[in-house]
Length: 630
Ligand code: FAD
Image (cartoon, rainbow, N blue to C red):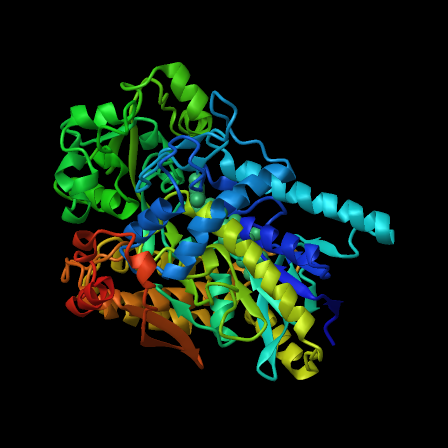
């Protein structure tokens, strides 16, 4: 009989990035016994890597900013496919969540008169990103961890144990969620170091596991982004939406090959950096789509004036939303105007003094100096698109963050809907604070309301152990997990990448079906003690499930919108804007359904010009809008 460590909690939070930590703080503040589980070391999550900042309409840098402008920008960025209620809550609550962080001890950069400084970012009408140099995520995580430590100190004073009400289980991977009697009953996983198994029984679980980038070959994401939360949710009976929408960040490093994909923050462009092709042309002026033409400068002179006089000039086209910039770079490289390493030049050296660059972008300076031996105060950077963020995720109730399975909640990058078809930079850090808090609050309420706690039956537990041990049982004679992972990444990169076509998407589904069979035969040598091959073997089925969702939804959606570009359907189609593609699992197969998007409330609709709405809405929707306005 395999030994299994057992724990009982009111709320279990899976993930220790910004969303998970904020949820855990809220659950603990509501008096719940809370566990935080993290696959990586505590403190190492993607949130730490966030460079540019957190978007919140505080109006510090421009007093014209407010939640309505932020809401409009977010909806525009998402091409109106966002869950409007999430975008509304996000825009309204983000400033409070940032201010609250300062009460926890965060120290954001300041304006000359002592307010929180805010910087420009793509798609945001006003400077809106609260930041700490280019290390904002680090400060965010440091502060949330500090708050957790202070809560643990309170608990020690009250109970004599630091871990009596909030405990962190680091380097612990969850592989299964248990549902009993139609509701969440617990989570099962293993300690990465010892390989020992652990069961957490709880009536409420918050998924905060982040994204899926490791299914792609070129990505800014690190090893733990294997879509675990997405797959766990589906296997528990919840649904995913918008999985066709992946954000390819326009500026990843392209050289040297060993670091290809690592992010170059958008702040480089926000602070004056421009994109040039191999002929030296500042090409973004050629790629401003009609829907954005009114907001973006037509000449270099106007664009350059905007940095010092934003009220009387329009924004530079380098600050278009990420999907637009990534597609433009892709087109320039394809047309033979790329750099030697297959990218484009990002130049801040010729536009800003060295002291400015070193002060505003210290991490970027070090990243290029150390990894590529490039001094960005003297030379341009070579950059290109990299898989960065998944807009798709667990379908949740906007107010409570509840998923379709009672007791299951999701927040942060693992949840879907908030960003529609494309996320604006800076909107993730604010998203995870707003909805992390909400998820923690409602998970705590759920724990209160669950009077009868269900035990996980022994047979269910045994099956989870058996699943986890299967790759070790097959030993080295099985399929090699690294080979299979490499092939999966290549399929997704080549056939479900930034520009998609029917024939390639169909081919990808055939290749994924083959890989699914091979994953069942993956085997690894060695034992359970720190065995990365075994860990990858267990992650593979998650990556495959989410990749299948992405490929299926990308084939189904016959239009181009945000992070989904079909070469064979290059336009946005207003009828498709009304549709969410919803993925669920039937046995092992991904089922795809169409579901109508919720209709935006009329007072929110009226925040937009009719002319702008006409670019996105169907005639029928416009007629309703006109009728309501009369
Ligand atoms: P994460 O912070 O990634 O945390 C996920 C957690 O889940 C981790 O603790 C992980 O170990 C854990 N986990 C995963 N699977 C399991 C499992 N099976 N069992 C247990 N634990 C598990 N956004 C912005 O708004 N502004 C920026 O400036 C910005 N810059 C970025 C720069 C980079 C390089 C990258 C990669 C992203 C950036 N983003 C930015 C995006 C943003 O950082 C992420 O979307 C966000 O931090 C995600 O937070 P999260 O809490 O949802 O997940």
